[in-house]
Amino acid sequence: MRTWKPSWRWLRAGGAGALLAMVGCATGSEQFGPQVKGSSTTLSSSVSIYRDLLSPYGDWFELPEVGWVWKPYEEQVGRDFVPYASFGQWRLSDWGWTFDTDLEWGWAAFHYGRWFVTPAHGWVWWPDDEWAPSWVDWRWGDGHIGWQPQPVPGQQVRRPWTFVASSDFVSPDVSRFLVPPDQESTLVSKTQPVGERVMGRTGQWNAGPTGEEVAQVLGEPVPRTGPLAPPTGQPPLTGSSASR
Image 1 (spheres, rainbow, N blue to C red):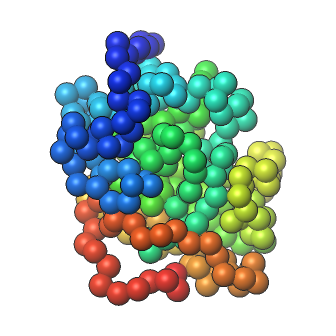
Image 2: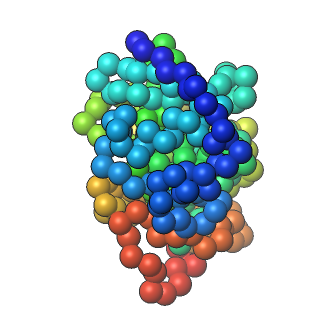
């Protein structure tokens, strides 16, 4: 396994704006960063820019078959870090559920690429260049909501389901309410796939349960994001979808 260490980190302060300046990308909401353009995750592609932007927050290393991946530093996120659960809250956008977080690298790792688990390293992130509200699939039923990161294209990698009681789904720092992992298989059998699958430029993302479904369980409106740029490959909305 090869590891990668950057020789410069001046982009740290610039964040997403520095990425825009370097690759000349069109951007949506500043909260969620730019929509990176590229066609692969090779070192020669624009996706390699992630390496310098994310290096202050974690390690890059190469895995057989999968290629280069990134893992956030344990001293920053803790040993029990779970993507799309730790340090954030699910909110409804015009394009589906999106994970709202204050993590400085959240604009990248929760809107591009895929998360999966390795025996040696735990959760790691595989970079990609297509933006979406979130790259997860959803399950619903038996009083629970579950989500699972979508697979790395062409790879069979472990992607555990994360479940919470439906009433806790939109709670801040939803990781406080996660169902223990040993109940995963039971809840998978008691829940059903949910959510509209939407074709992007190269992949399909899942909008998740509708706002009405979740609001009915909560007994109150769901938290929403501000306006977002369209996901990569999607046209602008022609009307309001606030009821989703």
